[in-house]
Length: 451
Image (cartoon, helix red, strand yellow):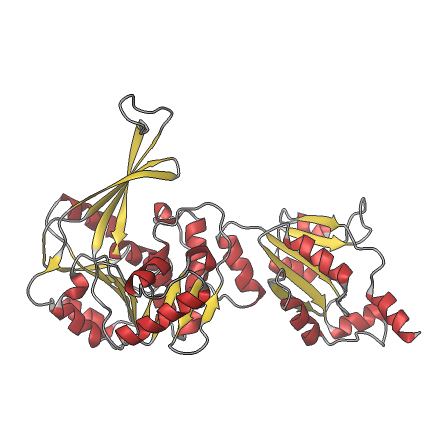
């Protein structure tokens, strides 16, 4: 039986009061929210735990303080059947965050509940769960849990990697842990003497945080820009995010940290875990964020290769575009077509003929450039997201495997039925023709070079 993922931190009850607004109050310029629907969900460490549980077959254990009040009872009911709860004796009431929302927009937030602090020694069940976990995620929400000496001692003894998602009002991470995941604003508050918002500034803050906290690595999440991973002095790794239209960013940090912890629990190295976390968080936001916490959650996906690109885009509700050809000598006509194809969706996968396939189509003197080299050149283009090599004479088989939403071809095909169109129609895809930059072809380039 696989060891569990253990989430340690402050459990909150989140409440959305969602209604409609069509007028302002007569006594103040504020909206009148009507037809209000109450929606409850786990918050804080509890949200991170249910996100992780929905994305893995591994058991997820939540170690958190819970009071004996109505809010705690509601939390227990929401967590039942999703995660195993190991409670810590607590003082103070359950923290409740209420967002007043009109449609997809928040207009106010009401917070209640005293800060939660652990009392006495950490229960043996909680200490053992932390010690023996495949990985531990610390979801700090500044309510006192991570500052308790017995909790910190248990985290220092953890046998698996520890991911720490910090909070401005929380404690510093335990020294020696694997990964800390502040967002840009949190990193800037802790390291205020580094100005700017560019990558250089973010990287400098990450290095400063590693030295200050004594941790293995820091991944600063940057919203739509992805995440920057630093191990200390030297060039950091930057993982771009998949563009997301709309969505609710609430819970994005929890989803990022949960995905990173799950990947580490499964044996990934830190860089792989951060790449998987960026993809997972993008998909989470695209699906509605925290408001969609109880919907089916996509698994943590491998971000490499065409399949990884397609999985991330599909999980975020995007459009997958593919195109194909030999691309033997890349010329302006190719570039124009590829750029136009990328504009039709959220990613572009280029399917290229193998060397044997090109010989059958073009003759024994072709290709001039090998398939691996052609793929490297195409992958270097900013508007190409992945390249796939196929050995058949037509891309039908690879299209069946990838199932893009759009298949785009450049050239004088307008009005004609593309050979691939019938394949696309079997899953509801669409084949389209793009304008071709006249006067450019690989064959013409080859002929001119022989003169």
